[in-house]
Length: 166
Image 1 (spheres, rainbow, N blue to C red):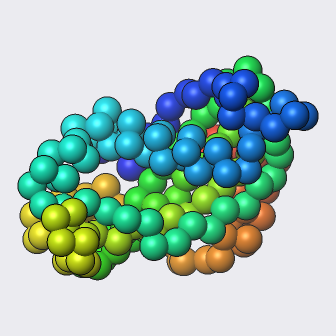
Image 2 (cartoon, one colour):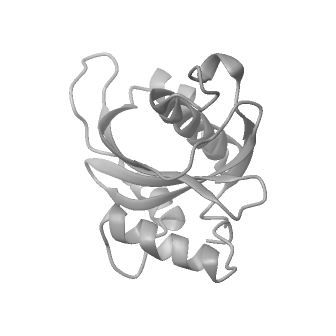
């Protein structure tokens, strides 16, 4: 099973600042839209199905590091992976690279919190969802800070290693 799905996205004019760089806040939209696409296409995981059955996720936190600007009309590759699945949260890492996959644009770690959309209250993940999530979990050898992760990723790129294979 592919634990690091990826997809290509075009940087749109309306998402850019006057310099033609992707607006910092819009990176979040690109990352979240890509993750939703990855869940649907790689795992047949439909967020609407869960929402209508009483489970949704809100964002507990984002940690993002911008490395190089993504620019108007550029094609970027976004890769996502589930780092950690817990009963009360999911931690996902997403990377944005240029289409040639030799430049890291940005990296983000997002924590998703399960909630009941009808009550707005926190929920625990159901056992069947946890069982499935563990099959796609891709924890790295050790949990390191995002800063240290970026250093390792940049070293991998410099050595000619692919960040997409995971």
